[in-house]
Image 1 (cartoon, rainbow, N blue to C red):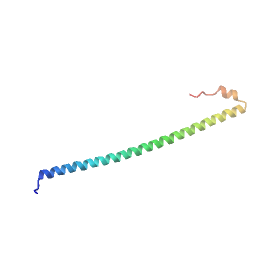
Image 2: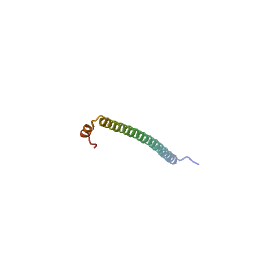
Image 3: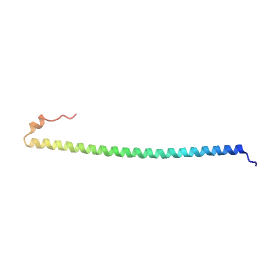
Image 4: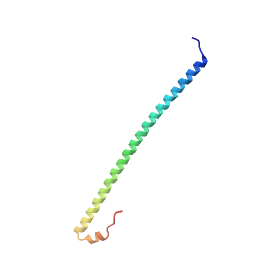
Length: 88
């Protein structure tokens, strides 16, 4: 078998394309993993924020109910009803 420089160069070019393709696929898989990680992180942060917001709202409603009840018990019910703020 004799050496053919043209065929050798073609073989090198084909191998180079295969390596580039493999590298590109590897980069795509890595970036997809990073995106998935970011989405999970963002979802966790959003969930934590919503839970904290719900807790604060519950505390606020509880305090409002308690202050209205205390005002009624002290005989200030008319004052509380007259100055009540309507929820929006």
